Length: 204
Image (cartoon, rainbow, N blue to C red; front, side, top):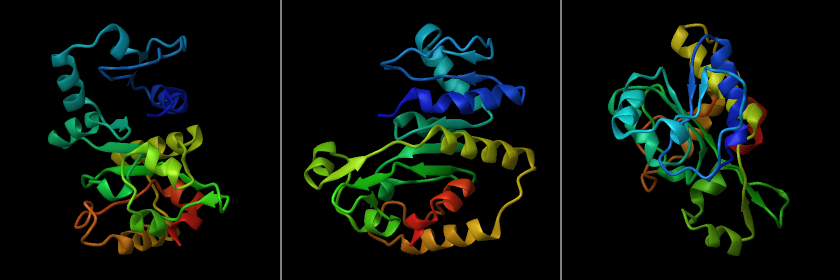
């Protein structure tokens, strides 16, 4: 689960670039606020159909999603995906152009976020009660992080993105932590570059 609110800045960015932001989903718990913009469409609430789901996933420039089955659809059509609010990290599978943002995991005892190494070494997977029992709080990506990775994806696809050598080094450090026991082993995984630079302590 994650808050729709933290995706709104990314929606506005897409519209500012001349695109349409289409909110998808088949079982949604909250309405998209009235943002007074005809290019931001609450398709999930007002227009959804089975055909429309497949058509949009196949034809969109890219999808900004979360840890849900919906992100599998664009991958079938070789459409890039941003896997925001992703958990558990070891289950991650990315396409060649995909980016991800992990859900931060906060240690109540140590008063800090767990590092990628700690997350990948942890036996914790999907059951929220297991995180509670371990004294861990699963948080959400910020609106700033989601906006930044959306901008990066759009610029990458337009051929305008300038990659940072520092960020690439952090990505390599993360890749080195992936072991054969992880489902994501054998695939290239990378976060958004601004996320990597802002949260570089997670890569230690």
